[in-house]
Length: 233
Image (tube, rainbow, N blue to C red; front, side, top):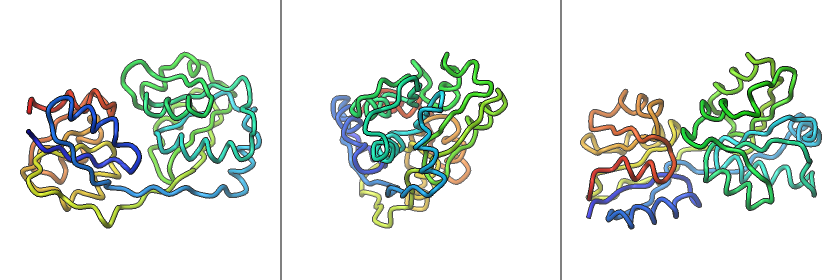
């Protein structure tokens, strides 16, 4: 039975661990990043108060959904109507559904490029779009939407920092990496011969810059795709 290290933040590992066990692997968990909510500053509070003026609100991750929804719910006891609630993938969509929202998400891809192809973003000229994300993050989608004429705001709703308690378990030969930030936080602890399962080519490219061992590119960060990238146990 192969030992596979899951490095997602706390609260986001159970589904992946279950699929790994079902596939005959032994999952271990050591989060690479710690997540903490950010309080809303005055400009961000105003954006949330004006939420009904937005054509779409995009949550870039399950963390963004959890902390973004909490911040919005403090100011909106009932969700505004007419807003497209966009999720990057199924895990993010599940958080939105639990909050009583109806998310729209890509059928495949599960990244910003796939979100940009959603029908509701085809014509966004002079429309307002809000992106809920971490304190820092990729600006690719915001740039593409602005090219289409949209007015894009960013709502930073959580902070990521390297987990000082991250540890590499003895006897583990494979690690799953689902973000560039997570990789940078753990890279120094990953053995040179370890197999890295990277959630997409963008992350894999960063891993290859520092890691001489095998790097396998999963189709997406979705649990099914991450497990499918593993060789048989």
